Length: 144
Image 1: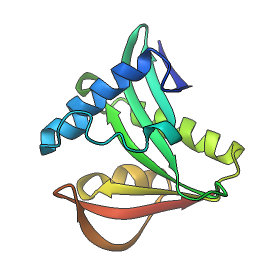
Image 2: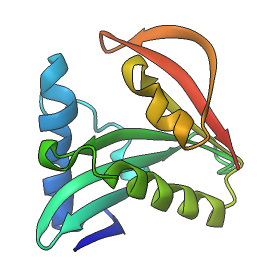
Image 3: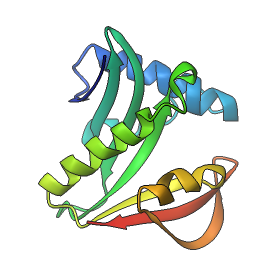
Image 4: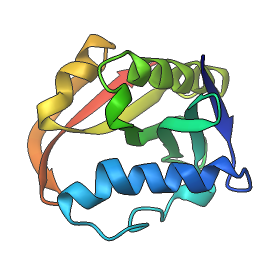
């Protein structure tokens, strides 16, 4: 049975989260392992666990000191679990937490080829397409 929970950097599952992000997000586009962790210490980490295996994660980074805006980053789901609704469960948990924290806006830099995932969850595209880490992205946001 899959469980979604929030962890901090001291949790032993954080190391599994780092490895999953390397495997799913960084290596396929040529970024060195652990090369996208600059905001980890100030962020909230949500993971999906099946028994003892970490199978998905997403990170929420505050964008301002007032905690009004935050950015959803580093969403990763293990290959074997993709397409089974796990990403939606992770984003739902992140959004529920964001509402409790009184954030007013959640932003995403979505890879252009997966914007439909976020639009189905009521995120809106704004601005022009841009390139980040060598991949085309779109600015997206949800007002809470």
